[in-house]
Length: 112
Length: 114
Image (cartoon, rainbow over all chains, first blue to last red):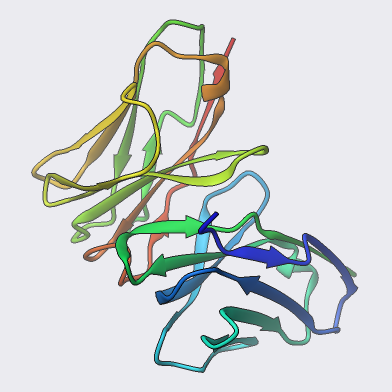
């Protein structure tokens, strides 16, 4: 499969702790995007990181990209109960620029 | 600015019927993409339309089709419905091609096929 795969599949932490989710993929990418989905709703775009970038920040979110390892990580610092959601990475491959491939997601549960 | 809207939000159909779902993108967005989300298969890309042209298509049978109008609104049609078509169908819009710009998703249409 060309899909990005998130790891872990599920993560449960206490409010205030940091949450780290990983995404691995198989072929060279043009860019990688992270999305959040609250239960049964549409997805919300979090961060887009291009293949020539190594790290991006947005508020409490930090995304890193290691193209040599074909992996990305999403770090949520000082988590809140409202961060409880599923997180997906979506990859756009160099040789198939117009298609998105979503991973299976990480279910994050932040306990108050 | 209004977000992406999808209608209807919920739909129940029987096998063999056809269904049309509608998506209105954010004003000014020219790209509309469609996705199917199921517990078993996850999120799968259906197709993307840009300036009324289908730019790309995922690995779905020909029963799944779509179109985009001059005002960028898009419709998706599924003919001869099967039980396995039960899913959340998500529409997303972006300023230009979805692969280079962030996508804004609608709330989805929950389709149940009985």
